[in-house]
Image (cartoon, rainbow, N blue to C red; front, side, top):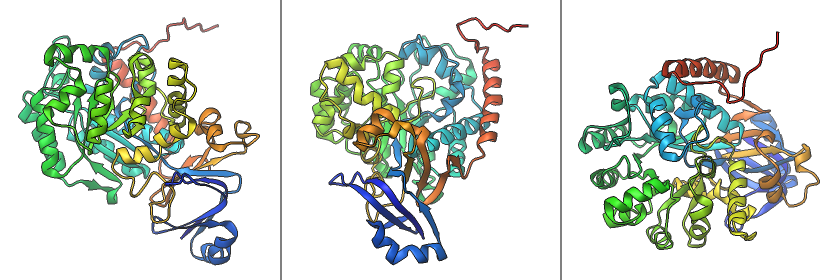
Length: 478
């Protein structure tokens, strides 16, 4: 039994979007069993919680659902600060990201994933989606091990391809890690993953059918094949698509249409499909996504850093208005940067207001939904997480509001999205278990994780011959 007592406010994100002042939560066997005013829960449960469980004093705190980050690349974390920020999507992937990820050992993938988990937990994230893991099924296992140790939830899968662009210059080892020689070989690897069963770690880790996606790397046979394979296993499916101008042009030349229209013609879209980026999308394609119930993971950090064109052609407001489930992802540490969901929500709340000079677009409340209940919907888990309701799993984030960014304390949602960030996250629970408390991970040794990441990151950069020096001159005075 766990009693979280007397929070200043609980942001429920329930169907009525209630904000509950001076309420408490009772948690038993990982479930939220009672939500009530503090005095009522004190009278009925406080003594027993002290005797048989634990009491967390939440006065001065705001409680919200633990965040759901619907698109990450955990193996990219050791490339942070290494890849230039002057590259378009295609050049970024071909010249740096793919070669970097293709050379990672399973041990290095584990080190990178631990660092990613540590950062996500510290920013209030309880669940993430990483379904484009390159390398091998062993690399998926390495990431899964890090997730198990961290206490987080995750959706994991392989990033398989069956096309290798001619401009991609790789060693034989890199080619093996990134590319399958046939569609059948690619699908066989996904089948090998799914045959292990859909879940691990008592359901905290789910395995999905996935491919890397993007028209550069994926044949029509693979798009169709992964849909058929997913259906045979009863699995959801996820991949990148419509990410850049270059991809839209390739799709137009190869198929006569942009990517989403082409996927519709292939009959591979449905309500259990999660598509990442969806930058180059027409109004007609927005309607297709809505009609199929297809989910979208929008990555605002990557859109900005890689100059994808979101502010010029992006249809995120139209998707929201059409009822498409739009969630937010961090992408990777080198492509997007921040793994703080509130910073991602801030970007999303501001990008389209400015681009279209319309301050009504993506209000703070919508941005918060995108990192909570909409993220849960995108991962087909909104019946268990994404909001604070009796009967749901206790995935929670507690913010300490004693800092100046929270004062004077007017509208709590606007304050959270526009002024706060992960630095005031005090406590995180997943499945009723405290995985972060008093600003520290309860499962991971932060110092060891960070030190090993520095050591391994330096080793990888040296092995690849990548320049780690800043563009500005380093001066060491004697």
